[in-house]
Image 1 (spheres, rainbow, N blue to C red):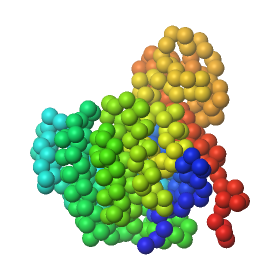
Image 2 (cartoon, one colour):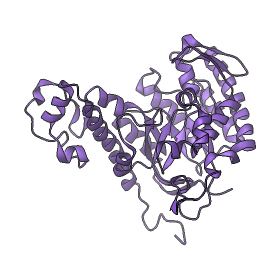
Image 3 (spheres, rainbow, N blue to C red):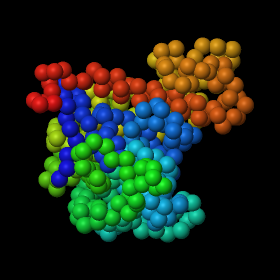
Image 4 (spheres, rainbow, N blue to C red):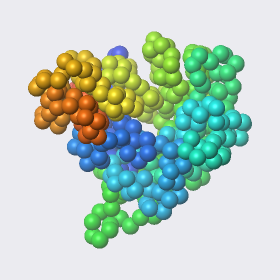
Length: 391
């Protein structure tokens, strides 16, 4: 089995500096992954994401399954080619989106029956079907199908969710191992008209040229259930492990407690991913605890509501106080927006209802998040004595 994760250095407090060796990109960790729900990080072009240094982004299985359809994307060469993104992609399982459709779904041992939020049509997701959709999309990393609990959830509800998650994890793994060779970029020519195909942007010589499957640790806010889930999933030997079911309304202290409970139980030689978090100070804290991967819609969602994250705190750029403020959004930031535009101009775009407002605000917020991870990675860089012999 080719190497997926290289651990380059670690700290006594648990922080890890590593590297993910994925088919389309070598990803430096810890990493923040922008969310591209429907084949796009909202309001931000792909070339801009590349210029900001994003090495891996997310696609959403549920949304892409409904529109334009996973088989259509497969016929067009996979999600990388469809959205013109040559770097790494991770797709979620669809479990969280189905969980969010509480009034439109029915959960059974076999899977989840749900109605589309688009047109009310009926669909049935099983672990096997979720894996099939993700294989068709062709992401570098796919997620096992899980069952997420709401907050608060009593013990009986959390135990039932855990039972389903464990059974579905095994089914996801078995189906993935039988079919993971069917990724659409394996069907593409290495070159088109003499130009290397973007979906064949293999890196280095690590030979990891197929998809990887991550399991998702659930268990609500119950420490013993989280431990039980993590231990059993580790026995199944997935490629990586995620901690899910967080940021669903629980206090931040509980989020931190669940992460701290699970991290020590996960293999040190495999990537660790916390799903759906969080604010800038949170992602830095979790990275320094030993989380390798994080994602969140917050940078772009906040941007569309005129909220900017800066070294001076959060700015609601539509506030009147910025009407004639000619300083950059964040004087300490070197992103393209802060180098070129003023707070007054960004406020004007909001007031005028200009679509460029969402774009510029999103670019800044994403740059701010990515810069945090760069700063953490730099602080965790291995010293000569930390490096493995021969490196």
